Length: 297
Image (cartoon, rainbow, N blue to C red; front, side, top):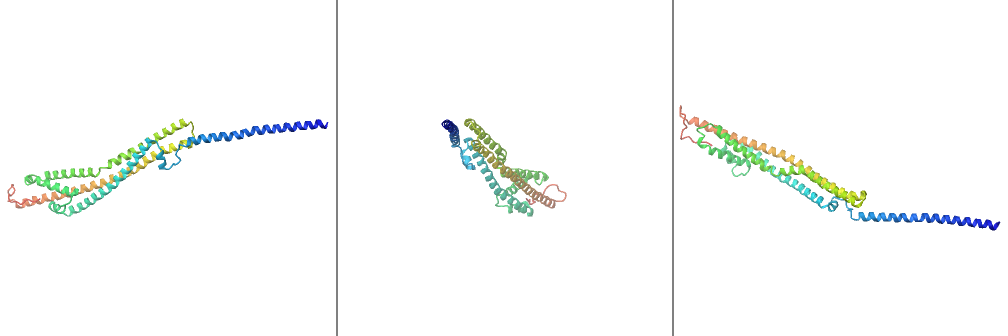
């Protein structure tokens, strides 16, 4: 009896030991295999991410971008530099021109005749000085007929000359602003082209890697979006600067119009003085001018 019981107990203990052993063998391989699987996955992801840029600063993304996206970014950067260069150049040019026009208007308003204005503007190379010279040239060209026809013709010719000089001066000072309009209207679309190209490359990379892991997709998308950001950085200042310069050029043209009006007043005054002197020296009842009359103007 004791022997049998001892045998049964021994068998039960052996079976329990075998069950524990089997359980430990069943769990242990699983525990060992899971790290192995994780190690393999980690190694694969490490291999996939080894070629990805870890520097997501703007400069790092630029260096890691596709060649087409790089070309877009470089072109937009040059456009931005051109925008600020035009702004600086035009601010200096407009400031000089507007100061000259304001001074010219004050001098022409104080002058009593075209001859006095010529003396004031002698030696100047500004647009108002050229306008005074043009008015004098037209007066000299019409000298032969001033005593025989009305003053309307010479006034019209002087006004025509001055108007054409206004247009030419405004066209010269507006050079370069067309570039700003082009940059402001096209830069966002150029940046969008770079973004589309970069996103296409990102999707191609997803297809090749056969994974949608954000760590793999994000750098390419960030590089693509950087192109749009640079496009906006180039376009927004260009539009603002273009509007600013357009208003300044409009003010300059208005100053030229005031200059032309002042010169036309001097011409009209000289013609009236000439007519009054002609009437004073003309013999009573005569309709022909006195050949000894000293001509004014």
